[in-house]
Length: 241
Image 1 (tube, one colour):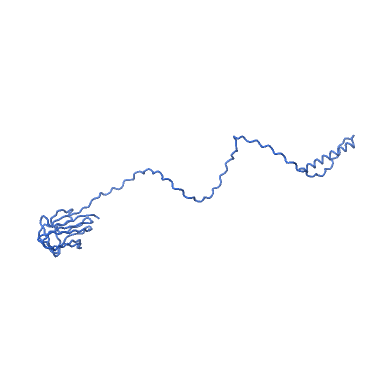
Image 2 (image 1 turned 180 degrees about the vertical axis):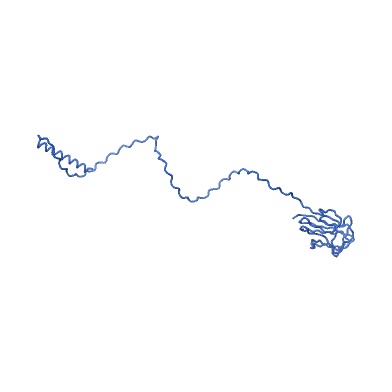
């Protein structure tokens, strides 16, 4: 920039000096001479001194403040981060409202309590026959006629656990066998010989439907009885199955 300035200044000085020389040598004519040849470019001038600091610009009114630019476009969704640690369990929620009533169920069957019991007496003073079923012919209680006075046997109608007991009067030795379908359950014998005595025996037995239970004599058969019932055989259902 300074180099060009010196060239221009040199050219102007050459032109001025040529004009003065022409005027002095030929004052009457007053004709301008030919422009001189431009001088050589001068050297660059030295850098000037540093200028003073300029005055600060006027501040914007405080009410305006910095202006917010327009909202940019959303960036791309980043990768999912690692799962954090589980937090503390929260407080229990408030119980919900009760649901509507359900539909009515199917009508159930009315429960019927099964019953079975009998109590019969031997109404004769004659001894039973040897190795035979002891028949008790006088009925005291006989629900649904489960005890058959003709055969002397109890037939099970309701499966379950039964309790059987007999009480006998005797004046001779007596052995009584309790059987279930030809299977011996227990044997009760009394070999004492006195003018008059009594004996008894009992047993809890599980029976299935249509099984039979009875009392039977063996060698000793001194069981007596009268119409009032000195010898009695009873049984009843404890629990059905």
